[in-house]
Length: 271
Ligand code: DGL
Image (cartoon, rainbow, N blue to C red; front, side, top):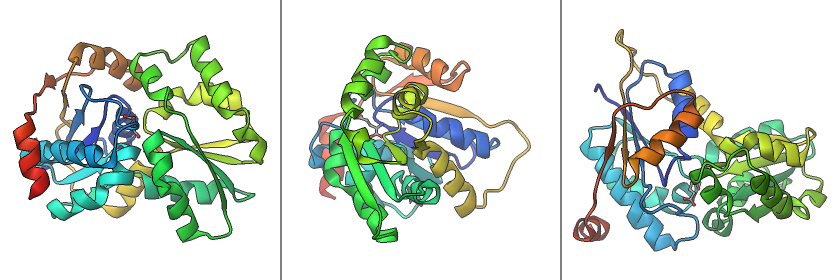
């Protein structure tokens, strides 16, 4: 592999980011890490999320990545500063690209954010939006059950629609015209979410925004041979392969399983 981009997420959700990066940079090698043994991250403490994120990054650095995409809103919200302290390679998270996109598309400046408990509690989107436009009103709602539904491949399922309706029924009374899907698992459910919120609301997919941001920020040399992709997961490669195929619309090759040890994590965290 030649100077690959590294991407990590807590599970399959980051494949929505992989899909978009692959689309805009088709000749770039990519290594993906999904922490399927420890998903979800969204209900865990900041300290735990930082530890997991550091572990994931160090693993990808060992694979000689040239830049890191944190394709997890929860890690982007809680751990990105810590990650940046540990390496000089560029690290791009999902919060800023999603925020910029939402500000571009909103007309009434009333923006909704849905995400994991961790992302919503961190108020990262709210801060990022206000930093760019103080006059915006931000309405946030944690929708944690959506991650396990995606990991379970319950995408086109009645129960999923009911849960989204239940989560959003009061939230939608806020006259929002834009909703940031502040979790990389959620674009997998984009159609169901759109059906529930109606066509007058624009859904912002941070995966698309991050890919655009990458294209704009980095000038990659291109190569003639087709790109090489490899996938690492911390558990259940078979399940990852099935859901991954559903998300990407094609078979995933080169999926490997990895193990971590606690001693190794603690060492790196204390550095
Ligand atoms: N896909 C991740 C995010 O964007 C993580 C969800 C989770 O693990 O709870 O936040």
